[in-house]
Image (tube, rainbow, N blue to C red):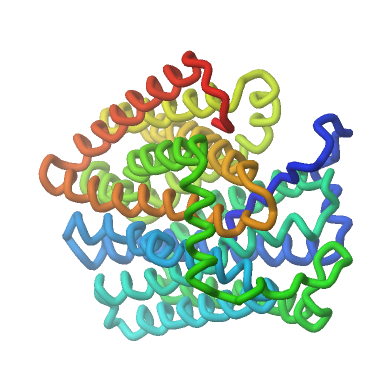
Length: 427
């Protein structure tokens, strides 16, 4: 799965013509990758639903269910900076082929485990961790490479297309999984994810055979000295040496650390509070994805009207309010509407923080500094999953959700206070 927002090009003129969203599809390799990635995203979101509900079904432990997102994001925290160095040092077509092949094998392993009837929470979490490890090495390379497949003035349109692909899959995958889980079980859903990597692997193989060219130019050789400790140090120094980037990292950890409560606790909320089955869980996840798809169409207008920090603060406040209200509601239509609204807010938070991270450094450092940003996101999501799982164990799922919502509302005030202070930064 590639949640892709190709980096903006800092050297591009500030005033340029508006590019239609579909225009980047005229580039053959980008078009093939986009279509293949859409299928892979659909497979990954189907598996995301299946893994979470499978653990919730075979374990009564609140903490075990909350560990599913933690197992997915922890590898980025552990390997993120190394992944950025590797992405800057290894031809990206070869790297992307290798990590996607590894993820396909891990998904096939999950299918075999589920089909055997011997699935345990620990085994499922271990395979989710393996999938997350592949994603950790994929994300910096993918984000750094994709802008080379389109023209500079098409980067924003490509970003919109990629987000649309990811969010469409986020809506369709859980809905499909929820409908099929009761009928066929988890194994076929995991197998579908394994097979969904086929298109990407074929495109990467063709890319490798063509010499790894990006935008008509040969793929740049590996960085001098290859993968070194100095490369790791350079990425950290560049990221930590910027006051505005440190502030961005703090926002990322705090916001995602609280917002992940929805993902971590939703299976438990459906199972223990709503007393419903996997189809209901998949439907609510699909509503979040549907809201994110809607965001792709409304965000351009919102960006034209509001500064990035104000837009981010509003999204954080909306997501926090959703988490506060959700435990009080039992009407299904209202639950779906709240989840869809949360999807709009989630997409706004992700794109605002991601675009700020991509605009912070030049291309030569982009993969490594993006990996630091992704590590901050992983820190928030991993730590938050553990925190809200423990809170739900102690105080119950509704109270844990409400507390996370209150934290987000407070942080929205922090963001607005920073904006009132007139800070000049990407956020």
